[in-house]
Image (cartoon, rainbow over all chains, first blue to last red; front, side, top):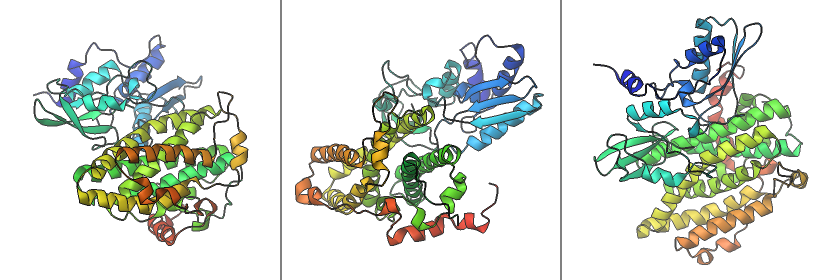
Length: 186
Length: 265
């Protein structure tokens, strides 16, 4: 039996990730390394797919600089992610790694890649609803019509905007009569 | 204790009001962890608390990097009560669930307005931060509205408890908008659209009051009978004068920190 993480990966194959196009070989390799660093709360998705890596540069002397941005400002996993990102890059051969967290390119749920959304769905969480054009912040009306990740039904209701982690809300599906969680739009 | 004086630059002082309110409110809300009336509410208050402490940290970091204040841990955990500029509302004990809920509703509506105005500032870092944090607070106001509505329109008992809490909370909620010394100067600062970004406390209060009273009327609360229109605000927090509850809260909140103030976490 394949584990949940593998299944999620297989089904998301071919969908667009968050690694930028047109990179040098060296930069691409580092991005790929980070694409292997899992989010600690939803381990099927990488920090890259989640969209929290906002910049990656390599200086002339080989020092790698990474800018992360938190999903939610109070995310307790942030320091852990900084550390894991740094370790992964050092292990991949970078001589010096500097990881910094800033809000300069603030995270929104629109930063999650297509592949990431599919992995989230396969993990059993509803991905965040897409922002409607012209909407500048999270569209909370969309919370009420979350699509059930099991049966796809929108005949659902939100039980609470706060779930087991800051980025999840609690829902109930009237068609499969099961509770589910949604990755919150932000 | 650090004896670093309060910042005199208006922006730094204003951000410190925001940060201290969030830290103290977050700490109080975290006291619901394990005690919530139902599991979902236990989780909600704990999550909101986590957000609030995160917001406080983001502002303390900015104050440290851009305004020369001590590092966030020192600023948060190593100041005497008289140098804390949080409001009376946030330092009050959690009371019953009705009190905490009404406070949460009043407080987060005010925070939302402040973030909305701060997102018009010229400084791109603060602009981005305020926009981001405002999105998070949307979940707080959404949560508070849902429960205010259903409990005010629920049973006779739930309604009575909510009305009692409203009377208790209101004077302190008005105290969130205490005027302060750098206010005028900050009101003159031009934001990114060429207009002043900070409308001043009086204006913020009017805006807040219009919104909250409108909702209350919608939920069939007779605000005049309740006496909300003739309430005097409870002031002092922004100048470091507090109720007896802040000192004991700080004592508890900083107990671990004080074991070794220089520890690396």
